[in-house]
Amino acid sequence: MASITDIRKSEQRLIWALLVNVILTFAQIAGGVISGSLALIADALHNFSDAVSLLIALIARKWAEKPADKNRTFGYKRAELIGAMINLTTLILIGFYLLFEAVMRAFEPEPITGWIVVIIACVALIIDVITAALTYTLAKNSLNIRAAFLHNLADALSSVAVIIAGTLIILYEWYFVDTICTFIIACYVIYHGLH
Image 1 (cartoon, rainbow, N blue to C red):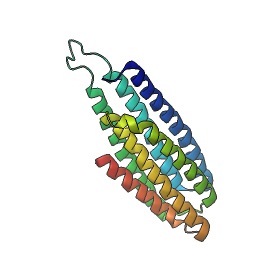
Image 2: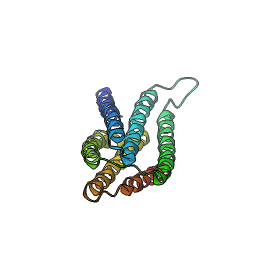
Image 3: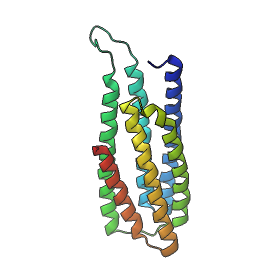
Image 4: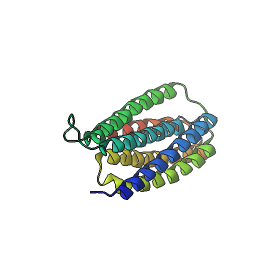
């Protein structure tokens, strides 16, 4: 059984990961709006889902610590399972929203500033790796934290895809790659939500 000190340290890691993801989400949304990149906004929404998943994981972890009582003789351990279910459902909903946006963008393409996309996506990748590292050890003992960790891994891969799209836009002005990247991110998000 984990000591109180270990539990508090794991909560601090989750709080830091949550704060970093919230800041990153706002930076990516601003960058996506300024650059015109739907893929960057898709990655921002994915990051927002990471922040929500970390918040849910933190709340569920706190609830799971509560001792058993006469109404819940097994305690509140199921709170973490419910948290994992909410996280995965959120991931699936965001994936379908991104699919919708990708289809709409295919009919109305817009010019995109590739440098902004690449720079912000690189920062996002670094933050995604840091966040994944913060939750990695906690994911081994908790299905709930594992769901949050998987969110972070998927988001790191999304950031790589956005970097590639931004680079192709800079080099060749292939704006359609942004829409394709959004579609890939959406499918990947849905896949992770279902598995």
